[in-house]
Length: 510
Image (cartoon, rainbow, N blue to C red; front, side):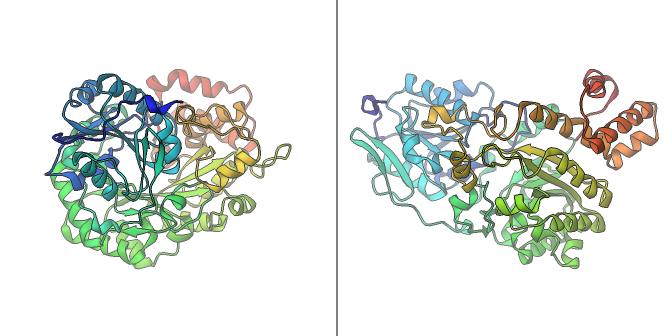
């Protein structure tokens, strides 16, 4: 591609607007999580620029909103992970180019941070904000507003007519040195309303970032490269203060901590729980944990976790096979998974255990763990705590990770441009060298039907025991349990019947 034909003008003196766009991240109608990536980079700019945060999923007539703000724009920012969000980001970038070819387009987020030079080579991008964007993006905007390109700004790459310039990396910034995310710039109420309407959510729930990074070295996770396995968390007092304010402002019932590893620091978690209890706010909360960490928490802290409103812990188990856990550098064992399930039962904390199937292996060799192996292990978890939820995901190599490099070594074709990456969707890829199409369809059935019916939680058990619909539920339970235990899924008449009668007979399954 000849990038020298661009009309981008880095001299943005007299311009006052900063337009930030959050593209839809997936084909499917998943739960809408607030576009906090936009709010975080907007925070240091408040008071100096006219900030326009536009979310494709939430903002009505989002395209018109973006294009109508270009005349006085310093730049347009686009946040993206790998896959479909790139596709939607490119589509918007092309519209921006057509309407205002001189306006610089800045990309940030996981994917551009992993491939800054390749991203800048696309005509859809002029500048990449690499890694943490809080400080870097502010310096980029200030530089453009002063009439200068982002030369010498650490943590960014940018296009010039002579070629792509990649500046030196920026050292990681302590999250405590960054101002609070300006939630008021996001349409929080509309996001809550959409989740309640589209996803049957009863509680008013939003996300909150309380920490960054993870000390783990999991081979499938890009966090290790972006943050060099460095974890940093907001001070407990600040977390409590901001959460209490959000609960009061938006009348919240629940907070979802969207941290990679909320439970990395036991002392901090204890202080947060004590602060929430002392504040007297009645909320529930959800957070993610490593299986090797969670079950080692002290009993008094686990009690505080429950008392402060912890509704559910998301445990990234990934596998029950010791060779696979070693391959992916999980740093946890199947025994850790079982112990974490025991903790959930003993302290009345809901647990969701996630697994991944289809990890790479050499061509011509069998998988070290099958979907049936995972189902057998899930049955063991359910015997410990029937209310545990589980979900199986199909592995997709994420760029910047050791398992991505291994996948390429084993024959995976690597995308070579931003446009090619747009069709590489970790959430919905239809092809995999290590998961057959029939197995992918089976996993869809397992997640949506066989697991919840075969191993019913307390809500499902009530439906099995009482009510006018108990016999359809009992029939499905018996059939699903037989399938899960035998591994025989041919002629799935019960699955077809479930899909046909779902709306009329069966309530939505969480």
